Image (cartoon, rainbow, N blue to C red):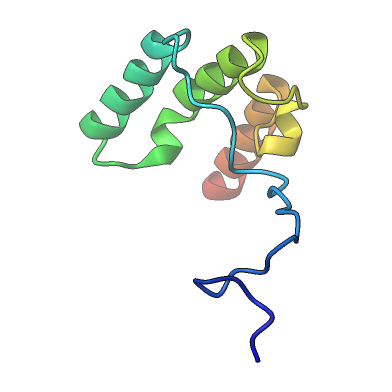
Length: 98
């Protein structure tokens, strides 16, 4: 005898949403310009997301401002401060020059 539903699902069990990765769709197109900038950058840079980080950051900030996703520190999403980026760029330049 099976304890699951008709298609193998567990009846009565409440689904648990994932912590990250799923958020409301932008039905009102509140962040369309940011999204289009990011996608355009990806296309022009051969889908190299590293070169388009500033656009993805801008898009995520727009989503947070419009309550389309939970507000989080950008460091938690993999973005560093501009000062930190400059410092790491200087360090890599110094290593290359040695």
